[in-house]
Image 1 (cartoon, rainbow, N blue to C red):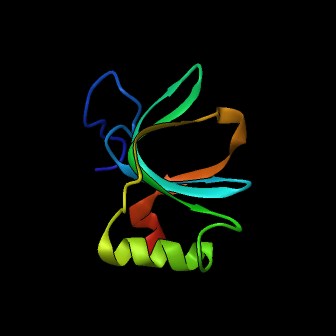
Image 2 (cartoon, helix red, strand yellow):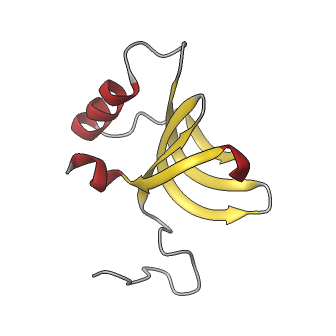
Length: 93
């Protein structure tokens, strides 16, 4: 259903689990919106470079297999830090 907005009036990714990349971290969480403060994710977990064991790809594969290990109920990532964002389902392909 390409182009279908689950909640009319919201961003097309609203409610979708996304992978959001920054310079220092990879966030996986349920997309809510882009606010003046940044991108709002719910029930999110993160791979932090130099902190989380393994690689970003290993973290992503583990998340695909077992689900998001949420460490933050709500998190805002400043929009200027976002290097890329895609649906988690796209990472499986």
